[in-house]
Image (cartoon, rainbow, N blue to C red; front, side):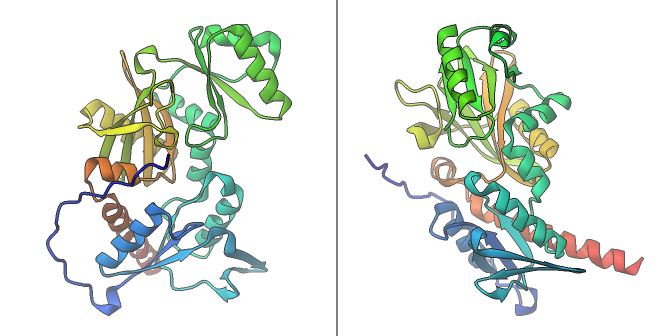
Length: 327
């Protein structure tokens, strides 16, 4: 049954005067579909702030390379006049999306997430390696490739039950739970035969079916909710039927969420955390977080804050270029 959309309850804001025409910026939004909730809200927020939004279908962006020249064309015309770009790169087009982001970066267009941190976040193992390296707590995780090493790997993550994840996955797809060695070996054999790389991960018993999603913009958490899996499901993702509840994030959780985003190198990200007995454990950092449910649950105008941050990023970029030209 199709889930009924809830209206977004946002507190009224005082009317803000539109900026003079000379100060209006053009915000580019890389998105496959301008009708998606997050894309529509970003366009709306940009207009409400008195600026212009331009949605570009990522796969319609063509890269044109020649000696000493980098151009981007869109539906046959050169892309120009963008003051800042917000990339909303879906997992299914990661490679092409990163190439488009790279091209914009080489053209000198400010992009609030360049290709390197997007790629880091998309690769679950790479992200966990970085978080672990910088002292951020994560569920115990093992990557292995030979069947005879699986038993030791399961012990390394704390025994059964354990979680099995695809390195590339999104919205709970490719996340499984194994309750016996027969299940573990069967899942791994199947996935390996399909050419998939997998991770074994510690099962945090006290958080089973529940996690926390925090939305980080810049240096702070702007909204957070606790997600609860539906009955019979251990994955709490909203796309898998989970439900969300607004929470006031404890300072310890907020601090580690912001640190995790900075370690990956992003400006805006969704951070998924588990509430363990020893404190927050970071599961994932999402570089293109959807925020429909988060706006509905919390009543926070996330889109506006997202765009405001992009505009500040653009102005800081321009100020930096101006300063370099004077040196």
